[in-house]
Length: 187
Image (cartoon, rainbow, N blue to C red; front, side, top):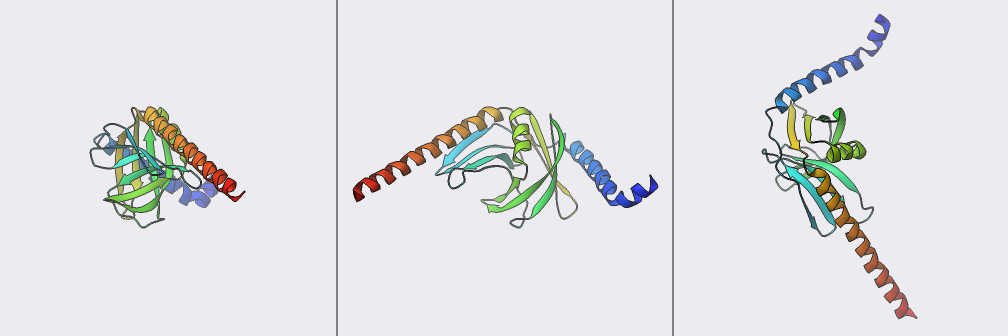
């Protein structure tokens, strides 16, 4: 046992530190801001479903309906980060606590957009949970803590995804019509 602990002491200490940090974050989450209502919007080939909290930070999903047509979960937050920087984070919801990484997508309007690395896990939480707490580890040794109300998220996210799929389908129809008209002109 002693040999195991010596070999894995760093790993064990990191886990213990994370647990204490998460406990501290949960303590502060009880007084953190709670989100208002979910909304979705679209512009060009970008679809966003999100909710803001009282601190002005946002959590949601963004779908880009061009190229590979990918969707990402994100948090829009009011601290600075360098593009592509990775932030270890802890999330807590009705379905339990998890560790995730957030990747800085860069500056956007008045804050920074960070994308979650595990879409399926966050999707499951966003669609089935009522609340979400996020503690982002900062380089200063502190945590940026946010809490979001997920009530209504499932309906809003599904509506946004439907619109995104319709946008993709209509774009394909236009592309096919252009291709067939171009082809017929050549004959």
